[in-house]
Length: 467
Image (cartoon, rainbow, N blue to C red; front, side, top):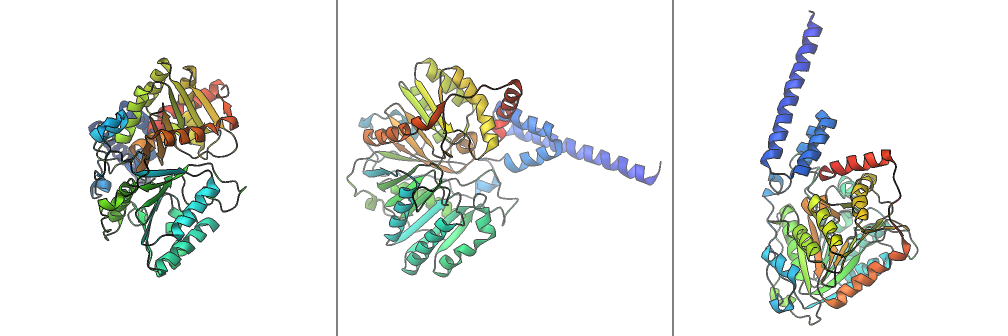
């Protein structure tokens, strides 16, 4: 036996041994972390399908709450402030309080932007009127004519002495972190920016699957602009008729803005050593307009899964209707069961999605779930004109949930998200009317699928907990 054969034989055995120990470690980790069976099955399939790469992918993407990555990040614990009385009889609001989420406040004003043009105009006007502070958190910040105009305004406000701080997600805004030249004028003017869990500065420590998906613009600690839209030309337009995505942007004035500021403060201080000034709660109790709003953060920095559990609870409470609007639909088994049981109880369930989203794997993955729901009488509405990126959930006439979270496993269990729960009848009606505007532009029901298509759909459905 020559030397080359011996080396080749030894190398093969070493690789086999290493692979065995990695697979053993992976299986042990899955069992010790008490993952759901569906998650373990999905990851097992990935590892079997691509033995070496699958293990690496698992090691990079498996972590969630129990990781060193989030161990040093302060937990988001919103302070109680001017909470409504229990006399309002809001079961979901009370459930969230029991889950350590601050109660709803009533001294708020809510406004829903009509389209991407109005969203852009409201953002520009609000920024121009800033007197003391501008805090912005977003997943994507583009490098285009829209963001250049925003940077120009922010730079001018920084020169005027306004405190300007921008927080971008490192993965969502990777091109900006690689080429931050667009931000230099703002930095020179005294503004500051940071990248959340930078995968460039700490590629091993900061996991790719733990991303800050929260979107919020907080001005002078009394106005918040939030929703599902990122900051780029795909979401905002300065001219009518441009082919932007359809999204949801809303404005809040009043007490609830205090909780948005708290969330930004936690996120900013986890990435930057500088501490933000605490805001006096008394200053947030001056608005007399009665919109009842509860701010609900979600993610690895929240002690429990209050957002997910409150949605599940709401689905079981529903008596009349459940309307879901989301770009990506990848629920877990518990949510699927709740939706099916709602249909069995006679609840009208409608799911509005883009006919074709920007993520083909998500589109394939959703199909298996949607076909199962459609068999139970759920109405599937596919929005035709363009990409639908809005996220909202309407349950009866009791609550409208709007914000950054998609109706998928990643948003519920991995991303850092923030949602606003609206309890006022007027605001719920506003969301209802807004959702109804999509109906006329939707095709109803899924197209029939052949056997090969069904096989692909079910395969990706099985993998979806790991996506």
